[in-house]
Length: 125
Image 1: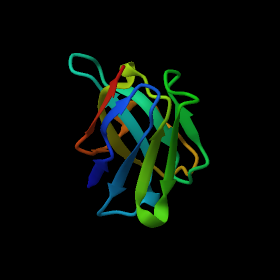
Image 2: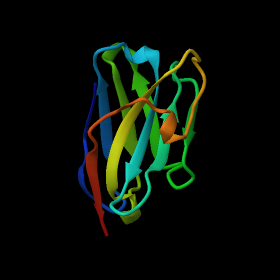
Image 3: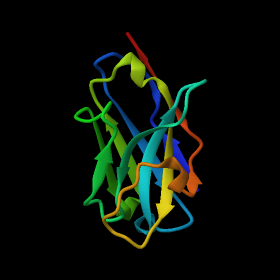
Image 4: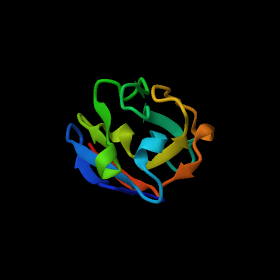
């Protein structure tokens, strides 16, 4: 089970930190990803992190502003979002992908088996 939290309302230029707590299996079993979706639009890749945390990958639209990290001891993945823009407004979802690789990252949402419920992020101009 994945439980996302930390969304809310922020002003442009502001920051938010999303958290995703994993239960039922150790977080270390999964590569993790964050995706977002606005109503009427396709689900969009945001960031992913490998099982070990060594590998990360970001969408071009968030590179340099967002940071994904993980704390396997706390079974939690984070998404630090800085310099927020109105176009970052969306429902953000965390997702887990079981994998034997400790370094692999994957930006394709269809490769993720487990999904959280989503948390709304709204950025005002």
